Image 1 (tube, rainbow, N blue to C red):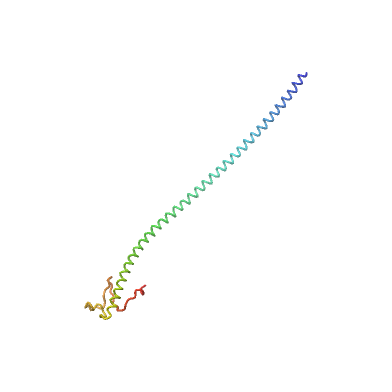
Image 2: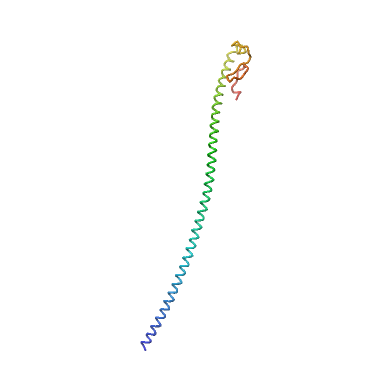
Length: 159
């Protein structure tokens, strides 16, 4: 009977081992399921973060594209304004050169007239009479009629 008892006790040990093994396996299976579920949840959160990041980047791209369009439009308008201002500047420079030339010519005429007026104090009052012209008016270089004045012309009074 000792063999029966020993086999009975070894059978009890086996059954308790197999129950322990079953418990251990069940516990490992629960842990494995919890890890799987935790991993699924972590992957879901990761996908959500990735999608949010992608949405943020897409929004930023749209905002930068809009800003780029606005800057391109502003650059185009500024470039057009630059061309217009350069054309206007060119016209003004040409007009300035023409006016400078006219001013220089008129200054020479005035200097010449002052020289003649100052040196001809003993000359007849009317320069037209010097050339035996009886008219009391003459014509300047620009073709305008003017009356000869014996007073010296002060150029600084004109400015």
